[in-house]
Image 1: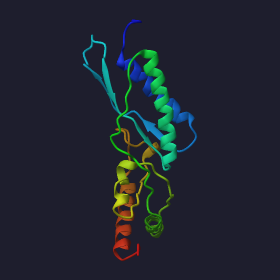
Image 2 (image 1 turned 90 degrees about the vertical axis):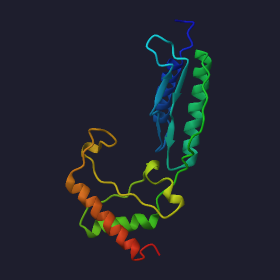
Image 3 (image 1 turned 60 degrees about the vertical axis):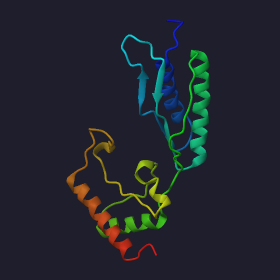
Image 4 (image 1 turned 30 degrees about the vertical axis):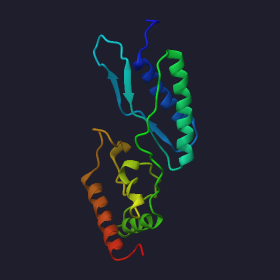
Length: 182
């Protein structure tokens, strides 16, 4: 066992380190290892290579870089201790892209007009609006999920809340169409 160079053991340590570092650093960032693929992937073969994803999101670029630097430092320590090289390859540069203040105001007004409660929330949900902010003023409408569970098979949003969200969206689009952004 002591002579093995098990890439999956190193990747596992790194995944735990990502969680530990993201939890320990102050700020609103999140860091996620969402995919791990061990190769060759046979039950009786020591993994010689692992490909894993790492996504770090925050509303502030400096926080993303600070978290990544800490993770890279820990990766270097793991690589040296386990004699397994660890390399990073950037696939997407997720630069923070806040939603447009006026769009947020229009969404809030639509909810208020419908008699709905609302809350202005920062969101690091880059996959939803990250690229659109470079093209047009962007906003996001969130609807409540029972117990706050999202992105899970256990997620549930009532039909009434979905209809409320759709009505807020409809009013928002109509207000923008009438020139509310100008």
